[in-house]
Figure (cartoon, rainbow, N blue to C red):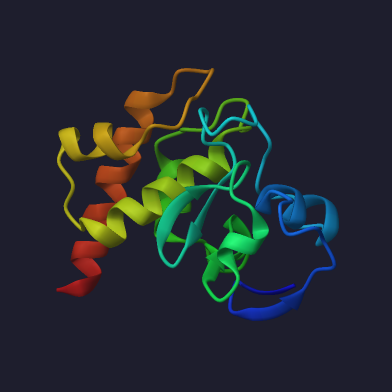
Length: 154
C-alpha cells in the first residue's frame, strides 16, 4: 500500500486493516508516535491526516491511502524546533514525556485551525490524557506558542 507520510511516498506491505499506528511503528520504524490505550481514548497515538488530528491506533491504514499523513517526526527537527516544542520546553510541560508527541500533534492541529485559541478552545481540542497531570502547563505552552506565531506573522 502506498502512503504519503511527512511529504514522502512510502510503500508498506501490510494488511489493509492494520492500524496506522502499527504501520508507522512496526513496519516503518517511526517510533515517535506512541501506543497508549489502543481504543482511541488517550491520544498518545495522535497524528495528522490531511491536517486533522487522528488517533492512529484505530485508523486502518487503508483508510488513509491518498491522504497526507504527518507524524511528530515532521513537526520540527533537532536543529529547528517547532514553536510548540520550544513553548513546551519553556513551560516545562513534559514530565514522563510519554503523551507528549500526541499532545504536540493535537496542539499543532488546534493552532492551525485557531491561531489565537481561548482556554475553552484549548480545553475542547486537547482531549489527550496526561497521567502526570500537566494540563495547566499544556494550556500555557499553547498560549505561548500562539503568541509567538502571532508575533512572527506581524
